[in-house]
Length: 160
Image 1 (tube, one colour):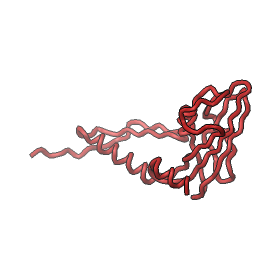
Image 2: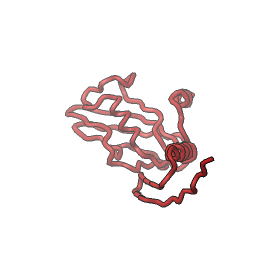
Image 3: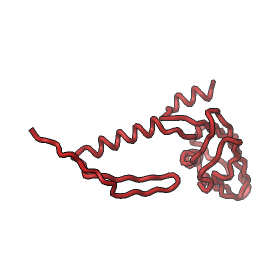
């Protein structure tokens, strides 16, 4: 029977900034990297609290495949950009954030008007571009949570 050698783990690289960290360690037996990586990912998804937008309402838009007059990006691109927004929410309440911009303009996350207990941590994030005569009015709902929440669960919460 083959005996496993006890791995001597040493940190090879550590990169840190405000929103990103990278750790590499090894050597590991074949397949252990995937096992350990999945375990760490599951723990981070289940245990780390964070704030996120869970609902977006844009005046005159009824589904995500609509093009907004005067806006360069379509609604799908705007939603994907908003998913990259990092929010700090102080408590467990649901909050309404508002955005009202007239063009020409480059709309960033810093243009979003937030309540007292909500802060946008990456205000430089570009959401969309508005051409001359264009206007974007948007209402966003955000909350603090933990773990993954499916679209069906979000929809049920929003409709209640």
